Image (cartoon, rainbow, N blue to C red; front, side, top):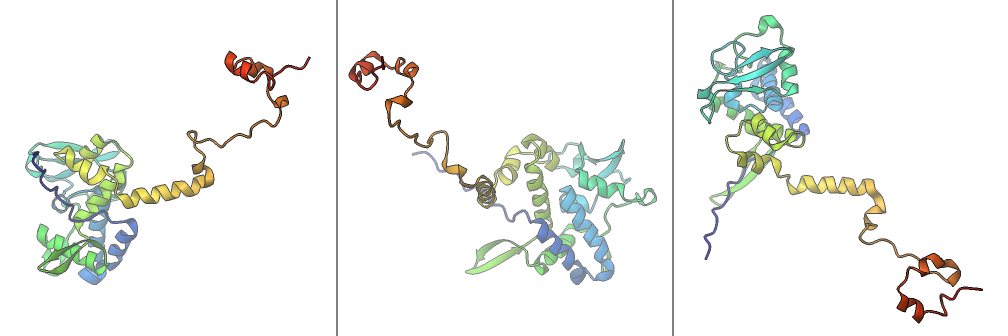
Length: 264
């Protein structure tokens, strides 16, 4: 008997929608206080438009020696040193247009130090766990459930996190660029990750597109080339062209001589 394949890894979240992202932005002041809200909203917007991992975003600099953005002509590019990559290879990558726009809007005299400020009531932080927990609290305040599981007989809900913003970025671009380009943009070392999480469209999304297409086509879906409408049979020999009759096999013409008889 063939061995059964091991169960595949289940994604621990989902891509959030634009409406859900707006709800997260609205809940920021309630979680981090009004005076720090703008910095956190800017961070969330950067994650939404860049697809960066949270560890990358909070370490991203304008002029540092490690993970940084660099000016190239009229655009910015992303330079990732080997030690910041899972693949242990240095990369220079393009930046998505919306994130490029965010970076260009920063005044030149402010393009120094970290790209994102992450203030807390105890001061600035660069701790991944601290930032991740705060973003999850924002997701919970916005009531954005991304998955649920059973633990000790109880249902455990998972609220929107920083990585769900990255999933949303990948899902948006999956419909616009090739799988290979998407792998580069997302910096997946294994193409299977790109294919599993972003290329395969979920059933709900496909169903919505089919419903929209059916509404646009109206009743024409029932009339396909494989099943054309039946044509009305001629009621008399006058509607039959003698040119067409001559194309029939001889035995058919002989059997129906009276029907196809030419008038003299």
